[in-house]
Length: 278
Image: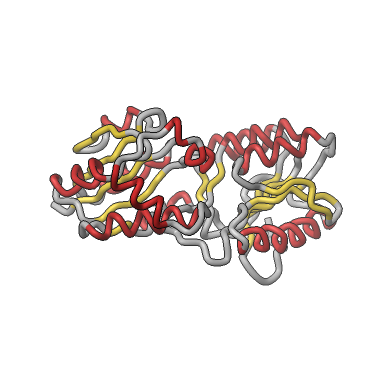
């Protein structure tokens, strides 16, 4: 039986990946992170062991003992956790890796982790084959359609989001009247949206795009019900996401909550005209 390892962060995504892999006949082995991973994964996976964020050698040894040579990263670990070392348990291997890093950009940290796993013959692979059903379609996903003014803001926001993505700052911008209201940084999408509420600017458009050089092994852009909750708090009106590269967690709940709040969600292409027919 083929095996798949999962490095499981927060949220429902690790379980979705595990369930899909099991349905395809894979033996699933999970590296669970204390304080982050949902314990319900133990009901799905064949093997689960728990580790502290910052450990490297023990998780790698656990995978090798289970003859796992292919791993996916699923679920969110906020980067801010990596900048609070007192909350982590770095082992010698992790400390050696950190000393070799030139900076703390997302791509740098994740590539360094991938290199450490590869030294032991374990390859971190793209997660998208396991979550194809969750990827956003290129269409208006909810009832209604953006207004002409909102389509213009979507196009402007796409340019701005890809710009900050190219600088590895974030993936999301909040815009209104072709002006940037808030930019995602280390705080994540939901908090960036809520920051726009602090300014008292209503009816904004939120645009989330993959980085131009997005490494889908490490970080697949995602939204879910919590994104809609943040938009409700900010009184935002439109959420535009990159089709084919953005996962929708809790799809039915997200759509239901968005339509109840009269929020329009649309999947747009990375390039070309943004306007999509309902």
